[in-house]
Image (cartoon, rainbow, N blue to C red; front, side, top):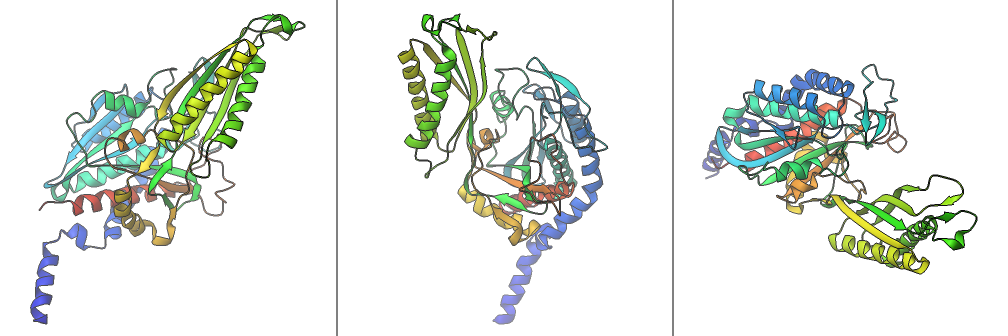
Length: 436
């Protein structure tokens, strides 16, 4: 009886594809090792030639040419510069989506790297430097590497994979234009392809290279861009009683919102951040102007809390303005919903991450008040988003220049680690869902 059981076990194992029977991380690492020189070359080239949101034409051309070289048929021009391609495996299985963002930031680079960006551009009317200060150059390189590895074994691959190279994750260079993920979806990215899961990653200065950060449920905040216009009545600065001062009202409203967050919102249950980044008013030292404009961001993790905070903000603005004889108009635009990792998918993916990084190197992340429009994909299908450590050995991540800093410095070992993690996640998911 025991001999027959052993024989049956051997027979079952022989039916399992070699990709699964082998040490999984070893198979993945072979593919990553072969791709590492190209990962570095892609990343350095893209880093030296960054492009702002909606302007990623050179980047998109590089992506499309490589996907064609892999035998794929990329769709280009989605949301302006977005690129997508579907790899069909030789065996039946699930459909999944993997996404990388392509755009850079209006930041003048201060890293001193030999391939540092010297690019300048005009951003919302102002001359700026342009830098991959958030690591999207690494994201593009990683996803190109994953596409290359999966295409190399397409005959034995179960299912289908859509590779999405997205523009304008940081927002468009043109004010008021949609962010890239929503625009790609609005233009029919998933019209003929319905994935059952979506995956994304981000290199992260807050983690040591070799670490991977993940979290089930809410991970990244929703991001709203708000604008408050206070209209008073212009008068001479020496006679404020003859007019209505919108600057004072604007300041009172801003302070009122901070009291509201501290005293009216249960931030022990869910964090809320409301920040003003601009306060513009007037042209002369002795004239009280007619209008003042404040612009800022609201970060929340819960849709109901978000709606409640916006309603309170509007009430505070209206009441302070009314008390002073002014008017106030608040507009709020949601740039990205909260990024929420599907709990079932999170549980399923974690062993894949541990195969690559080791169980002790997969870190449970606290809530992050940054935002990401990967959430647009994760709102359509179950999604999972993780962070890949990018701060080199010997540097304290808590002291390292953060993402968006002009001195953000990526340890290029993060390229191989990111590719290995995403490749392991996708292959494990596809193999588990194979139908024969």
